Image (cartoon, rainbow, N blue to C red; front, top):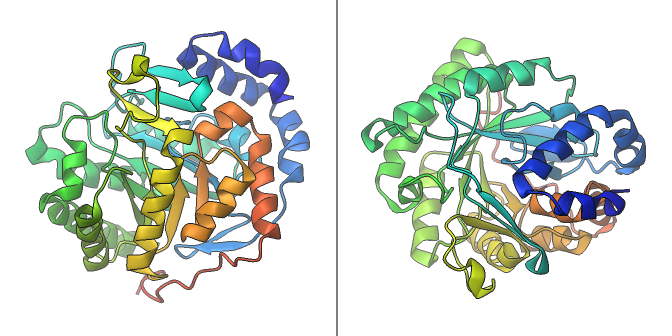
Length: 352
């Protein structure tokens, strides 16, 4: 079905088509459930202490305000990640800010964390009927100065905590100035320390533990990965998402090499898989990895597991392949011989 409507969607401005597709999906949710969701096999997976019906998730960025959870869940996803959300609403960068590169099966975006704010997202999550695992991806407001950025993350965490099954810290978007500096800076210790302390305080007062994940870039070198891993271990972070979009332009035509933004889709696949493998070589099964980046086929999903991921997420592949990719990936994973049931550290997944 999606192959029939994709040409019409691709003839429109990319961001307008994105919004119209989500609006259509809301109206067609029962049909989507019958055609796609009902065909997704069960592959129970335990991730960060959470039980998933299958390990194929939706990546953050597609549903920034959590306004379409039910229609997206109807596609068969095992878990949904919404956001990135900031404490205060912000419009993001000027349009146009989303571009298709069809020959490369890629997207280039420079949204800049456009969202309606954490209060709106929380209400939308509460109103959703989906009873599965929802992750909430948080970031800092563009106008927040660096010296107050930590407060943005702790504020956002406290705002979304009651509605989240896990929370992801986005420190790797290339579209918020200075954000990626956190990855290679000693300031990351201050950020993670403050966020973990706030999470632990909330876990005690709410009597409910919410795991924390960190989303990293695909453009880190070996030294950068070593530094990230050391901090993930030191602060006992529960999961790592690899990877965000890339700033590299070697895999795209000259027309796009001067455009600002992050590149996703097929050009980032090899880089993301290399980061997953490098992380797993350093972390083993101590901290689970969620693999994302360039997943355009069932084989790509299995390759991410083979590289060391415990679960996968889709974004750009959904734009090019449609909802059928979800069940296709879940079937391939279920049929593969590799187990994705990775042992997790027996720590702090229950209060006390």
